[in-house]
Image (tube, rainbow, N blue to C red):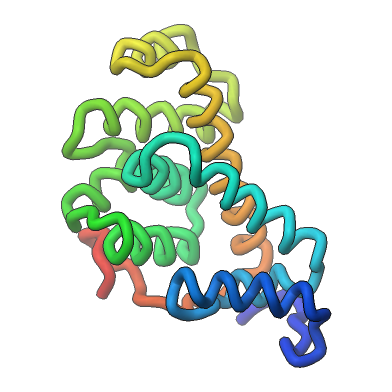
Amino acid sequence: MPRLNVPALDDAPAGVQRILAGVGAQLGFVPDMFKVIASNPTVLEAVTTLQGTLSRVLDAKTRHSIALAVSEANGCDYCLAIHTYVSSEFGRMSSEDIALGRAGSSVDPKRAAVARFAQRVVESRGRVSDADLAAVRGAGYTDPQILAIVAVAVQALFTNFINNVNETEIDIPAVDSAGAPS
């Protein structure tokens, strides 16, 4: 059961309703996570602006792999469900690649290096080793791209923390053991 109070959306300011309508248009529905965040318009704007800005760094499958790896490492069931849904429905990732992303890997060796690095960022609280950096560089990533990887990982952590604090109820297809929508 959610632990934070969520006011009725009808009572939300017009700007919040506009943002939520945009989310709904993009995903086909407004996930409960955004309804929770909408109780603080400034946080909602920060989350959606950050997501929009970071959608321009790295390719979509790489961003999805990062989000899956981070959400698994951080134990956020809600984020695993939504990232699985988005990765499958919009990112056209296979069930196998989604499951591998959760495990810090990928069917693509370059994305596997990114997913593993993102997990290491979470597990080490950002204090990655020289070997971790060498591995992601060895996969072909430049320092500016590594900054993008860290930024996408932090964006995922941001929503992981919100959903873990709230214990947001999953309102999208649950994640099965294979990492696919069930």
